[in-house]
Length: 218
Length: 218
Image (tube, rainbow over all chains, first blue to last red; front, side, top):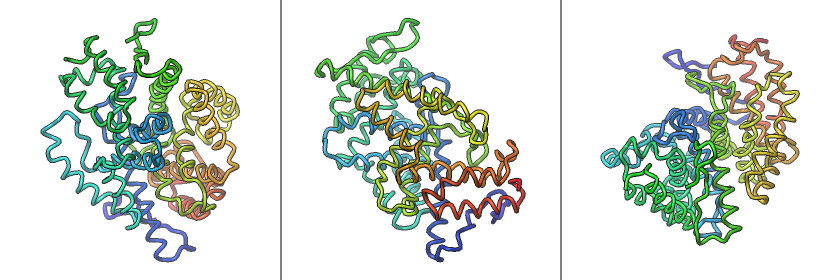
């Protein structure tokens, strides 16, 4: 067992003697990464849980949308895509928030320097991993952000649908607290149409319904 | 918009007019399921987060171990397995806790009637889905529980390694609170050897280390 300089934190440095030296370093990096990503459970989003008891964190959100791949794959715009990659993209896509935080999607000021913060975060966090895995994770995150492949377009659609459902089914509590208008929500949801047109038509009808019923401003 | 009898809960019943009637029912069931599984975020486990600030919930745990598939696949006992299925098994494996709760792995009394409670939970929760998806989810959960396939053995290994790491790197706080002995931990970790021998040897060395350093009783 090793304890860091502050005497506070155990260091992952107790490895199998049957591993070669290079393998040990690799394994150590993988374990350090597993410990590091635990921090995503502390990143709070604006979204509230369905029972309104508290805000959701980004680890919970990532689980929920990765599961949603299994439920809604039939609605992907491009049917013959690699859903395993969609799932991996979604499990990875928010890790940069460990350093960069979650920026509310309607916070236009906050979003301006968000991209730069997120790239710095990606540089640090993914590079805890052995180089080949660091590159794999970085590629998945870049793919998500660029929204060019069918897989990333479907991933982005699911990433937007889930918090939308939370908003709608909690009667727009977060929308109202932040004085959000329906045009903002429609613009924010546009990637849903790119990735899953059926889901977009559903979202669109719920937006209209939310306005009609007074829990989203016109 | 529809509101249920108690006037408390919005019902997912606002569907795309372009969908056929059968498709609408299917879509409605899928959306209901997405809303239902949100409850997994309220199921608290004995495991505490790495910073000891609070207990982990089962949604966070499921995300963490699904991500771990991407990190540790090279240590699976059987190399040529379907890691997409491993990942899907792990995303699904704790859903039954929405009804059955999380039973502490060292609570022998509680575990006696746990299996029956979990089967009832599976019957209810998975059957919210359209029949084909309900069957898919049930099959994945059964596969996890039976531990017969290489995929489920690797999934079980990861499911046990992650909380073990939390225990070790928080200096055995939960072990001590529950007066757990090293022989219990070794027995509990046996499936790690079945699924990932390298990980088992690592776990085994950390158990010895935890005893030596006084945060796990011999």
